[in-house]
Length: 307
Image 1 (cartoon, rainbow, N blue to C red):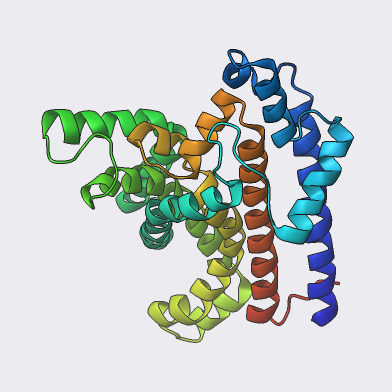
Image 2: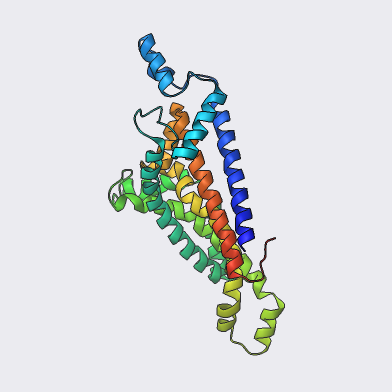
């Protein structure tokens, strides 16, 4: 087990190194000057001071070495180009908490409802509950989040006037984002749980248990659910990282000052340091969750042994 964990950590570090390096050089390969909009009307000496402050007076390889040194020794990723004086790491820590609130609640809601609907669909295969669940799942997968968000804003904000269209600070501000963010999770888990349950229910040991007179409730409770849910853990890798990174569009639509809000603005403003920092944060979160899921797999099911 220890050998497996060490090996996975090694892969994780290599992946992060590749992501950081590729992101850094790709961002700096984009033509243009990221400080042009800030420094074009400044005196020559002041402009040079700005470029020196952000290290843009050096070559790209030199900037990369300095960036990696600060990241590895101090955990720093520099200041935002768009918001002078604001450290990227501070912004990530502050605004990731904002993103986590609606994203985390949406994940919990989506998991619970999606799993329950998947169970209902599997136990009522080719019956009307199954058709309703699959219809909901198809809607959740095919309808874009910006369409769903716009429809909900029109219904609950414009017509019914019971929820605010945008904003942050009140519990009413997170209701619509939670619904929008959870809809895709509900659809994904409903389909996945149904498929896994039907596959497990067709196994020989399940048929043997039923032939011996074990009630359907006990068969489902003791055998089907555990074996059907284990593969669903793989989905958590994308779902957990999506708490922060999958809500960029939703945050922009509802005016939530989370990571997505700043990420979209940083792209528009060519804020190199913020873009790189957000990408590193997303990549690190993804690989850490992947490591946790791999360890959980081996602990929950003794039959699973990764060499």
